[in-house]
Length: 79
Image (cartoon, rainbow, N blue to C red; front, side, top):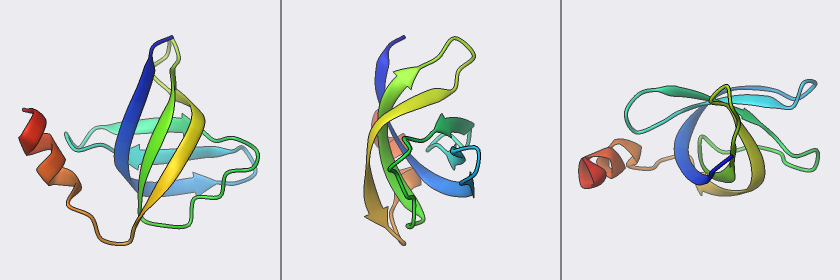
């Protein structure tokens, strides 16, 4: 149940089930359960949410980061 911020590249969105797959800076894939009013329209996002027991993230809020972003540079900063 920890709160996290995840910056990632949007790989897929299923608007019907409100699920998205993001690629993190370590190239891992994370499933995000989106809020009903969220609409992911850019390639890069920052999602704030709660980590569920199965490793998925339940979104509290998100910020669009645009179509081009140095996501993998973030991984270098925190490694």
